[in-house]
Image (tube, rainbow, N blue to C red; front, side):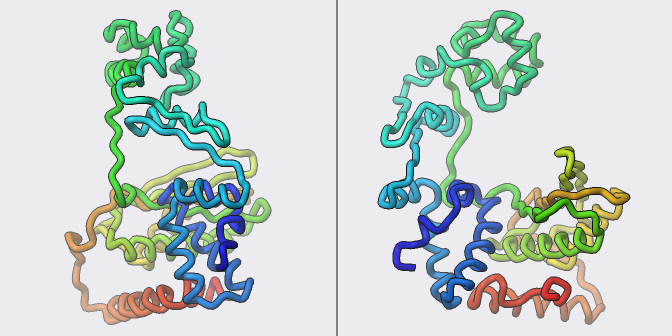
Length: 318
């Protein structure tokens, strides 16, 4: 798109490109806005593939060409890189050297460590463990007494620079999620169900695109008062079938029994992903089910060629 795509994306979407769970939502947004701009489906798809491949790090380099601030943090592992990012500033990369993680962490407040919440930090500070250096020097038994056996061991390891996180190139996320925010707090159950239909359809398409199936579906409903309700359901069989995901999503929603709830957003998450080629499917003699699955395969090919909005259920097109 003649170099426009980088500046074209809002900052929140540019940052979300590093998160596989956000890429589906951003792809839909990008395709819709590009189509409005008059670009054909082939150009939109080709441009999106470049954007998706760039991810967040590539965008740091691309955005520099447009004078947009970006920061980079680097380290021997994911945890140290994440914490280094907080100390970076535009134009200056913060890098933690190999073997220097413990020294880098020593003076930082305990709440800065990923995974340490306010309650845990308060407990540690009450016992004089307000920096990661002091946590690292504390006996393991003391930490386990304060925050629990497992949490205490993890805290002790991280404060001492032991990062068990790993970066797996091109790995598929262990879950996929999509969100449907409403422009205003929504009371209408029909609009809620339309959002669920749209979200389940997107999840199914994304699962099939990466040849995965899910075992669990989780629904989160966010309300106007900033509270939320989350419910999960284990599927009868692993699937990437949009119709099955939609039925489960409807069931989760109906089980909430909402009465004139002011809903701000609906989030649907597919979890416990596994390879599609290892999944089993219960054969039926229902011709409708087989017909729907064949239509789904054709629809996937059409969307891959002409964009995600090329085909949609009639309910969503109205």
